[in-house]
Image (tube, rainbow, N blue to C red; front, side, top):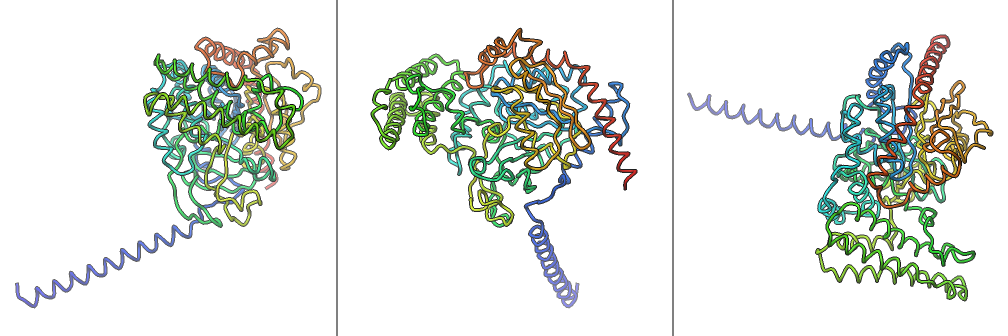
Length: 582
């Protein structure tokens, strides 16, 4: 080859490299600009594209199931049916498994378009969705409730890693211990992983509330929903991609992307009823439970005792090591001795400020006693000691569900949210113990809501709270007959509250009822036996709860089929109305 030709070739190659580099840089800049132009915060009253696509595909599953059940339906008439299990700790978690198991046998899972949970039922729901085909594998899901479980070492490894990260809170402790002690599994996946799944299962929506707005804020800032695609405030209609929940935002712009919380963290957020001061008053020492003694000054003391007591019970359920169990017995006795020490006479002589100081002193005494126990065991020689050491400083801070605020300095944020860089997402059951809010109104346009009621407290309370909530946010809700509310102490096993026009119909199914309890006293006795805050259930209790929930569903199969058929007709009428009034 001649020298001139060679030089020309080299020059052309060099020129091509320069042009290629410039084009690549231009392409990169264009991608950056496009990414920057996409708003990370979505503000819309409509479903996001991801959920809409899933729902469209899920409707094909629903249609096929309805036809197989002998219900006449076409693609345009597929009803929007949501299953909403209430909260209620392990009672709700196990009861939901039993209800779903029977629904699978009766072919009633595939007609569901949505499933929404709060509090204890989110524990089961998150565990179920770890299996992409769970609607056909309920036997396997139920078996895990009494399975061998998870080694405590796995929980400790997770806790050790999480404790080194920002925003570590009591919800993380609660999440890992309920995962290990009750659900018997460690689910390290992320909720956003489900965004790309097929539509084999109903579309899942989890609910929490923002603690600051719950205490002192407008209703629009309270309810928070999380799905595989989006997370945000239900009534404000402001959402981010679920993978960005916990990332740093300011004025509606993404400042710094942080890792998405895994399902253990999310489970701790969704099911942490202990975060609320009213809940920790469930246990009050007899000496303190007298008029004039139990007040806000005592809350710190009750927080310390109740949190430690519940954690000891959860740790006990997840280990069989004789040494660990022995040390737990010692710790339990330390707690009981301290809390049962009668200081009522001393309290009577104190004024308000002195009482506050006294309760603070009692709290510190309790923590010091536990810390001394932990020190005696030595560093790392007992799993319980390691966990307790991580818990002690968090109890005094009393932080639950700590995460970054997607509405920090956002122009449309209410004052209780806009000024705060950090928010606290906690158990939605503290507001309404059934996840009605995401399923009211036109956004998801629900025809039929099936409520599995496992709640403690006054029967129908979740229903009346939801009615009041709907009225406040101006969304349709069916009429509730006052005569029905008079049956609260000894309810029937199923009620139907018929929706008119835009109101959804609600099928309401109490766990303990006239069919499985002889009278109101037996209802109370069963609720006490399966109370929300107690050590994890024995195998016998789990079996009884599963069977009770299964029987409720089996007994009401025909009623459910009838209401599903009516939901199809309702959707058909809606469709005709739209066509006749374009």
